[in-house]
Length: 98
View 1 (spheres, rainbow, N blue to C red):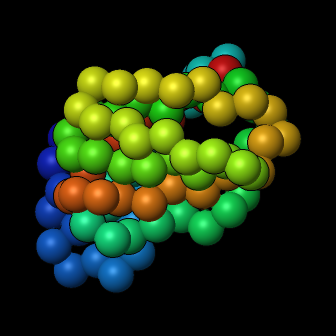
View 2 (tube, one colour; view 1 turned 135 degrees about the vertical axis):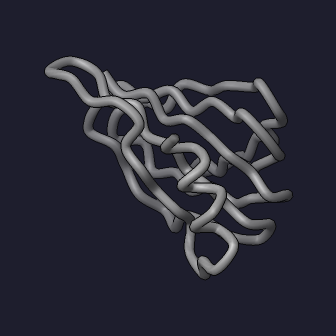
């Protein structure tokens, strides 16, 4: 029911909603919920990560470029790469780390 919780929390949210879907010793799956226009400011990850768009459309911004990701698109996020994410539509994404 985690995805339902994220969608419900988005109704009143002013920032992206983040909830852990699954966590083990080697893998962590996070659900990210965005309303159109919400963003995650530039940051880095210290583990191998894949971003998967389940619903909506986002822009993944790197140092010198950006990529639009639509429903079912995915992208690998390199360790220590500064990046940001902005929602073009109401969106649900998975982050798979590990």
